[in-house]
Image 1 (cartoon, helix red, strand yellow):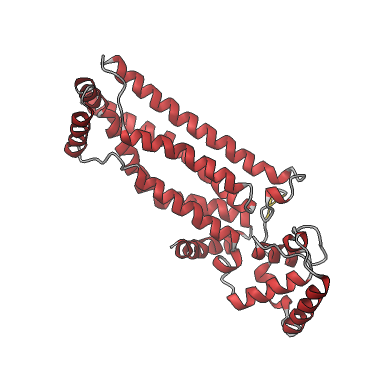
Image 2 (tube, one colour):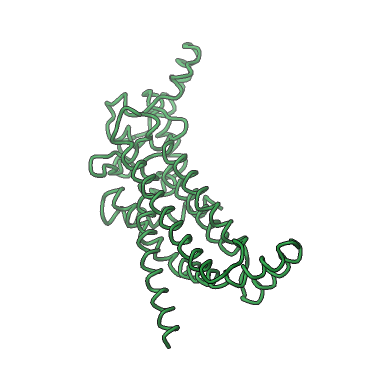
Length: 320
């Protein structure tokens, strides 16, 4: 399933790249378009959260009334959700979509020649073999190694050599290289130079770089750090908004703090997704971190705008 979405996203990213001729700008435009496509789902989710906030007083009353009978309390809470046409886990659907996007884009950025450029798998294998002969192979991101090699064939340091870190017997390697050379001697690598040599420079940052492969290069840490900052701003904003609503509800009620299954699920996912994303961002090509950074910034703007619109709608209804 992830390959299907990565392949689909690849068509869009390649289309944008052909327009702007820059991988980084194409990723940002890709993020914007994905957000626009997801906007109806986001609006629905926001409306669900707003509706859930309105249910808090009733939930508090139920929990206060049945605080000594957990089974009855759960039954009444579920009945409330049913009357309002909501599910306690309705927020999980959005989280599932986020996971699909997260790993699909990771696959797309990891294998851009397969999913974005749409090169034949046989051609990619030969390109990887030739790059491997030059000592620039990367077992984890072999297609990224090809792109880096095509950009600078003389370079011997831009791509980490995972295989050289685990050297095998020298005689065995020599035989394998001779066989590989014979196999690829009729293959003209220059025919694919234009397709493979993607322009991945983004304001002086090479989006093909993997932060953990070159920690000394501070530029490779800029985007992941900005992503972490934007993630915490997003979490802080969401937490403050939720806290404000809970305080408003408490001021109108003497009941104890409510148990909200949907809120608990959303809180968990609110932390799990950024932590998982950061963990992946530092071991993946920077193109992935740039996508998540752009997505975070867009999400913050989206949340602020939608909340303002919904608050105005509520005020209009109350004053009507």
